[in-house]
Image (tube, rainbow, N blue to C red):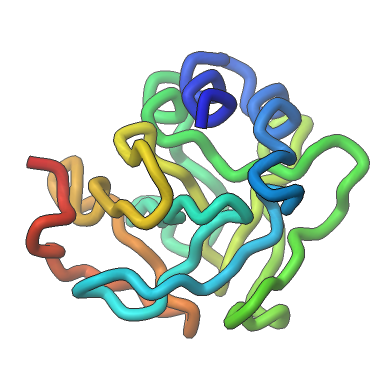
Amino acid sequence: MLAALACAVIASAAACGTAHASGGAGRPVYKLQATRLPGAGRVLTDGHGFTLYIYVPDHQGRSRCFELCAKDWPPLILPAGVRHALAGPGVNAALLGTVQRGGARQVTYNGWPLYLWQGDQEPGQATGQADDMGLWYVISASGAVDRRQLSGQAGD
């Protein structure tokens, strides 16, 4: 988790992807998995079990979250030399992709660039769901965006 918090402070998204690229039971952070989340069903998480989010203004295209935004919502960046994210349990490999982000590649799912939320302190949390005036949402393993407020999960 310390690596994820360090990423929130690092200004360079590419450096963040490298710093947060491995660990947690030896599973790379870019190996996505479907995890059951109370109130939301099966949602995407990174290789360490942290919930992944989409940003509504991205409109299934290029990322629009930079600078201060990316400090709170670190993009899921592939480490240098890695070309593709990996599909773990419950993830549809056909929905995985990337989008160019400066000199790095940000992981996408069903066309949506993916982000972590600095407020999630441990795997299985979704405190960013419907946060920042309803612009941030979890994404299901099917690729659908869940726009519900999660009781007991969203940031209070």
